[in-house]
Image 1: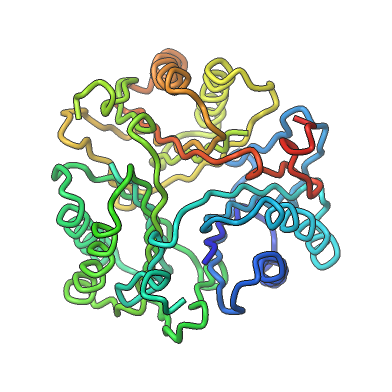
Image 2 (image 1 turned 180 degrees about the horizontal axis):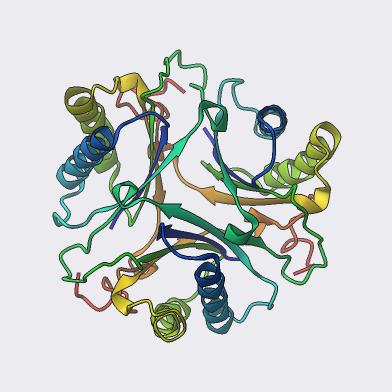
Amino acid sequence: MPLLRIDLYEGRSDDEIAKLLDAIHAVMLGAFKVPARDRYQIVSEHAPSRMIMEDTGLDIPRTSKFVMLQVTTRPRTREMKELFYKEMVTALELKCGVPPSDVMVNFVTCADEDWSFGLGRAQFLTKEL
Amino acid sequence: MPLLRIDLYEGRSDDEIAKLLDAIHAVMLGAFKVPARDRYQIVSEHAPSRMIMEDTGLDIPRTSKFVMLQVTTRPRTREMKELFYKEMVTALELKCGVPPSDVMVNFVTCADEDWSFGLGRAQFLTKEL
Amino acid sequence: MPLLRIDLYEGRSDDEIAKLLDAIHAVMLGAFKVPARDRYQIVSEHAPSRMIMEDTGLDIPRTSKFVMLQVTTRPRTREMKELFYKEMVTALELKCGVPPSDVMVNFVTCADEDWSFGLGRAQFLTKEL
């Protein structure tokens, strides 16, 4: 159920995008312990003039490989989020060559009643999930 | 005031998009009892490689007609949301030929002070709304 | 840290976009008292048929210069948000010729633990920020 909005700079090939999405999904599964098909990913690609990503003065360099992940989810513990942050940079560097300095994440939290995965039902309320 | 982000696969005509947005808006009006011109819809269209929408193991098939609705709103009751889910799939099937299995919804909640509709004012706080 | 999603109608030049983003950032700095490099802006541009922005019956006219700002942030006071709304319309009119009736803002709130700016760390938790 987490819904992931993934904002990238233009320039990756289809194959690179596919690998990136697979790597992101694998980390999410491990950190949140959700079903394998709990996969909802939306990619948007931007010209450099349309996505400005600085560093709040943290001295973190950014490159064209930058990945912004905005994750909308029902509540997750602080520990789960910290695990997600750590494992994400490790996996994206290893599998996709994205430097850890190029991975930014933001979580937005909502509730069980806030999701319908289809068929007009709120599957967390009906206990289908 | 709900702000609706509507993510679709590429391929719909302008006319199909217009009908879809009208149908979505009509359901929103009925479920939330908001003014007729409380309409804020943003559509983004994606290649299949850029939007991966599975089913959390619920065995819900997805097609190219898939519609992802992310609704940012001030608080709504669980009943209102459940009504929104149900009426949305009914309307989108009837008016737009979208199967109920292709309609996914997510709500994100914010407060009255979180909206300015223009003119630099927070209209829920000024009591204009 | 606020992450700003900025939705516009197609038609602005690169220079107009750059000026708009600079103006938005300057207001954000002033209203929220954040570091100068706390800048995270993502622009999406839409055909008129893909972005429908009415007025909830407030009688606010919209033009092709319309700017929708969705701001995801850790908690801000009501006063900060009201200041943000007011100063945003003033600055965008003065610097970019955007009428105050064309500026809509929505805030979404999250927590300190919900941000990683890179390197796999939650910089608000590690006290780097």
